[in-house]
Amino acid sequence: MIPDKLINFMCYDRGQTMIGIADVALPNLAYITEEIQGAGIAGSIDSPVVGHFQSLVTTVNWRSLFEANIPYIAPRTYHFDFRGSVQMYDQNSGALVSRAVAAVMRVMPKSLNLGTLNTAQQMGTAGEFEISYLKLSVERKEILEIDKFSFKCRIAGVDYLAKVRQDLGLA
Image 1 (tube, rainbow, N blue to C red):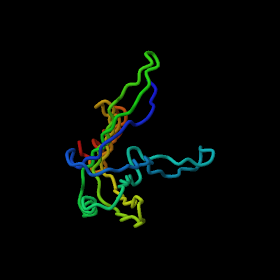
Image 2: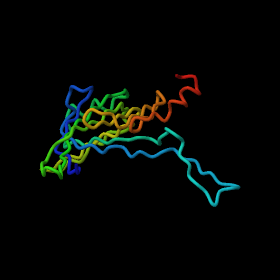
Image 3: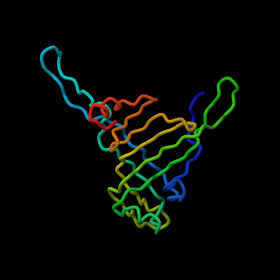
Image 4: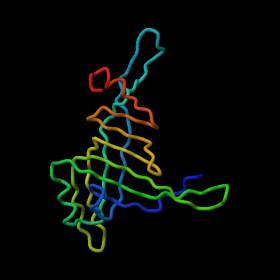
């Protein structure tokens, strides 16, 4: 199977209410790192802290200012659910098939750009959100789960913080 393109997706709040017609910038996953250097190392290395990520940010770009977008600046946690369908090319059969993809996030608002007023143009209204929980799945199979408050970092079925939780008395 060769991934082709995202056919389409929907944006939901708590899995039910559609949060509008939008495009979404998913977060960049960057570990927190610390430089190590000294005897026995030829130079320096930025060493990642296992399971610890820098700020995870998602941006929801709406087409225009709409009364349903404004409440997302209220200082509370939201549960966003982005569900999509990816077109795949099956090189054996020559068929185009689809696979379900999903990104589930617990977010808190960072900013709301109200956009620009220009005649006959989209306004560029955009909300930026800090992610504390992220789960990605393909065909309902979890491929990534990061939960900063619960010390979880599961990648392809391996929980890299399980032993850390045990060490801290959390498990």
